[in-house]
Image (cartoon, rainbow, N blue to C red; front, side):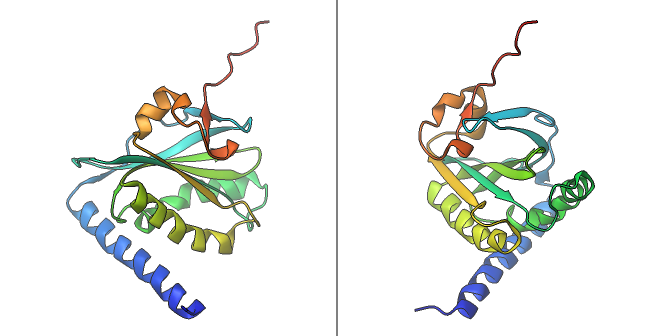
Length: 189
């Protein structure tokens, strides 16, 4: 049985390998920050709407086994302060080495649900098992800084992120917070 110390070393080692690979991607000019989806609203089956505030993607990479990963968390330390959330959205670009170098990573939309202070990641991955491995590693870190039971993830095999954005009905299972829906049309006045 692994001890907490050896489990922590494993997590740190995975993030360190990701940081090394991220540095290589950046040095090769393969990591990009597209602006295609910025400010886009994304509606979820739990009735919330989140907004894209950043996108990270690897250029010139082929995906053979697409999977979508949705990650959710609510940070404990910053509460509901709009100022602290604005600062977090700016500084979180520094977290890129924690995911971009994991095997199978392709892209991430960074989302926030501003009223509740919830953050989500909508990722495309090459390989659902690799996405799960990353999500379980990330969850160990997020549980330290997030409110109790706010950390979750859901993986959907066989679809690409942009396919899901075009057709939210592609996710039919999983928790409501992870299932995209077509936003309701504004009420007629």
